[in-house]
Image (cartoon, helix red, strand yellow):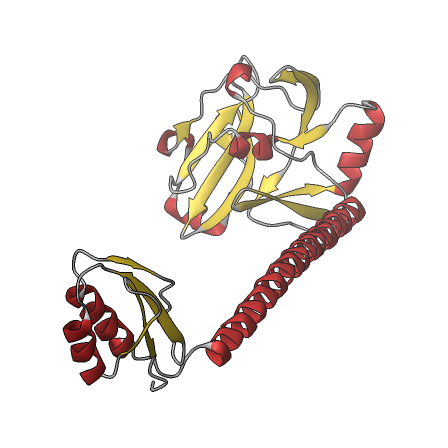
Length: 295
């Protein structure tokens, strides 16, 4: 059985369950507190007196603890629970069209029933007993509080929420600063690399421009030099030919030919081709021409 107004142990914690009601207050001495989707009502003066009688022991509501333990069903018309071993006293919960009403149960008599229940002729026989042991109970998240205590608790919750909000803003700002600093460093590094590449590109462009300025617009024609060289070597096959060959334009070429044979016919043929010769000994002849200057 669950005792009321005396210390009991729920989930290993000592506490006291005091009388509370569901469905609204009967006078302005009552205050309310939410428990899940419902509200429990209780007298503040009774709460103070219970605290004075049992200092340092948290006080919870009887119905509040049953709601927290999931032991009531508001869809049922009548539920009741005994608080004595003799089952001569307890409490009931009456539900009618979404409205709740609680009261005392004494010797199987439902005390102070609301009008609809009286009209229905509701009795204990129409209800369902809530059978529960101490081990079935769970503590609500918050003990019963006075009106001022609830206001103070709400202010504290709001203050903590604001502090968490400020902390979140500070954290986001810090992260933003960190990211901004990182991006700035990355940008600086990229700009440094870009400047280096840009300088190298500029140097390469200057070098290319210099090469373009120095390159030949037209390639020199070497046909005259090559043709003359071919005619000489072809005419004096088997002779000893020596000399420095230069294919650049406007260069004078001098080739020394040593041949003990009669070379007059061959030298005459070369002369017809514009290739001059000069005999310097019986066996030695200097053959000369000047490369073209045309491009």
